[in-house]
Length: 464
Ligand code: ADP
Ligand code: G6P
Image (cartoon, rainbow, N blue to C red; front, side, top):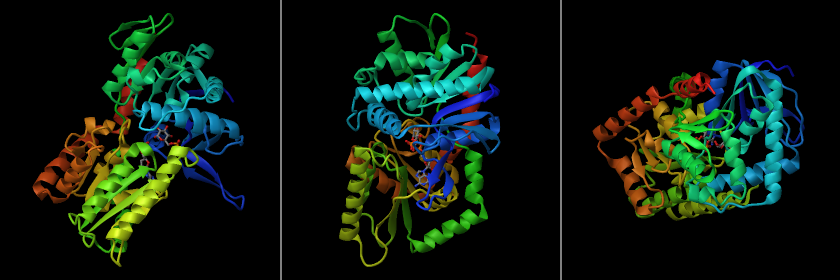
C-alpha cells in the first residue's frame, strides 16, 4: 500500500468486527467498547486510515473503504490472539492498570507475543503513513508502537492516548517489563491520559525510573521531547441527542416501557461484562433494596444490559457465572408472578436501542471500581430527554471528575451505595432537575470534537 495517509489512527480494534456465522456467511458488526464509540465520529470527520485488528484470528484481509476512510486490517494468529490479546493485554495489563481489582498474571511468552504484535502494527503504520503524517496510537495494547514507529519513521508526528487508568508507580513497578513500556510510550511526541492524576503518575514514573530531564509537562529525550498531559475523552453529544429524539427511537422506548409493564421507576445499568465495572456491588446493593422492601418490585424495575466481553479469560468467565447466579437468586427471592425485579440481558444491542433505554431510565447506575472515563455515564446524560433523570456515578470513574453533579458513590461501600441510589430515586424533582441541568451543560460543552481538536492541535503545534 502507498505511503499516502495524512492521518492514521492505530488501535487494536477496528471500528467493525468481522463475524463469520455457522453457515459460513460473513457479517460486519460495530466493535464493542468505549474506544470505538469515541473514535468512530473522529475518523468520519478527519478521514485517513484506521489500522487495527478485525476481531477474528487466523484471517488476512485486504484494506477497504468504510464511512469515508480506509480500514487497514492487521492479522493475528490464534496463538497471538491468546497470548497478546487475551493474555498480556487483558490478563496482565488490564487488571494491573485497573488498580489490581483482579490479580495480574505475568508470563514471559505473553510478553514476547506483545512485542511481536506491536512490531507488526508499527511496520504496517510505517507503510501506510504519508511523509510527515500525524499518527495517533490508541490504548494499552499498543504501548510499544510509539518508540518502534519513531525508529522506522522519524518524520512522523506521533501521538498516543491511553483510554484506561494509568496506575500509581507502586503498582506499575510490579510489571517485569516496566522499562520497555516506559521507553515505548516515550517514543511519542505527545502522550495523553484521561485525567490529570494519570498524567502525573506517568511523569512521576519517568522521574523515578529514568535519568531524563523534565521541563514541566515535557520529558526531554536526546532526539525529541515527549509531552505528557490529560485530555478527558467524551462522546458525539449532538449525535446522541439527535438519535434519542429520532421518532423510531422514541417509538422503541415506548415499546420497551410497555414491555416492562410501565413501572413507576426504571433503574438502568449498561456495561461491557467486565469485573472493573462494579457489577457485583451494583446488583447486590439493588438486590438488598428490593429484599428490604425499600424498593417495591411492583413499581420498580432494574434493567441491566451487559455486552459479552473477553469471554475466554478466566476472570470474565467467573464474573459471568456470578452475575447469572446473583440475578437468579434475587429474582426468585423477591419476584412475584409478574415481571422479575431485575431484567438482565447479556447481549450487545444497536446504538439506537441503547438510546431508547437511556430515554426511559429514571436512574442510571454506573459503579466501576476503576475506569479511565466511562462513556456510558455521558451517553445517558446526552440521551435522557428530560431534566428529571438522575445519574449515580462511581468516584472511581474518570467521568466523576467532570460530572460533579451526579450522585457520587464509593462502590465498595454497599450501604453508602444503597443510600445514594435511594436518594436518586426519592429526591425532590427540583433537586434532580438542578443536578441534571448541570450535567447536560457539561456534556454539551465537552464533546468528542473538542477532545480530538485539543489533542491534535497540541500534537501538530509541537516542534521537536
Ligand atoms: P468500556 O470502554 O470500558 O467498554 P465505556 O463506558 O467507556 O466502557 O464504553 C462502553 C461503550 O459500549 C458505550 O459506548 C456503550 O454504549 C457501549 N455498550 C455498553 N453495553 C452495551 C450493550 N449491551 N450493547 C451495545 N453497546 C453497549
Ligand atoms: C475498552 C478499552 C478498549 C477496548 C474496549 C473493548 O474500551 O479501552 O481498548 O477496545 O474496552 O474491549 P475489547 O477487548 O473487546 O477490544
